[in-house]
Image (cartoon, rainbow, N blue to C red; front, side):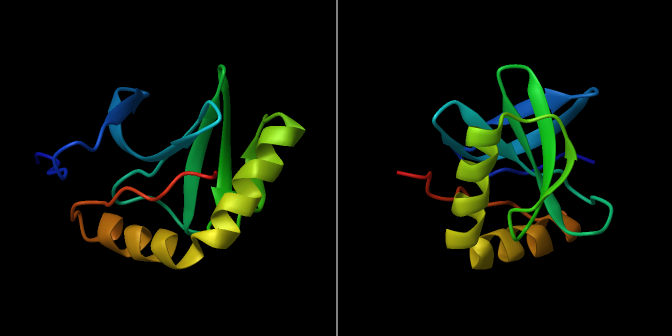
Length: 103
């Protein structure tokens, strides 16, 4: 099944699977898989480090620098409603939307 993405939304490849990039800030790349397992979460990557965060910004799994982890936590708190909306879209295999970066 082809993944339909809004124009301009980039993807990164992890384990051979395209993952839509929904935000980028201070070198951190935020992505979300389609049809992902529970609990609701997103992926963050920074200089070869990978982590999984809850939609509340809690680090669930992975190795991530403390200062970048705090940035991701703050970003997730600010954009929680948008993350929830994107999670729902991802479970429905619908197009995801970009989320404003942390500024």
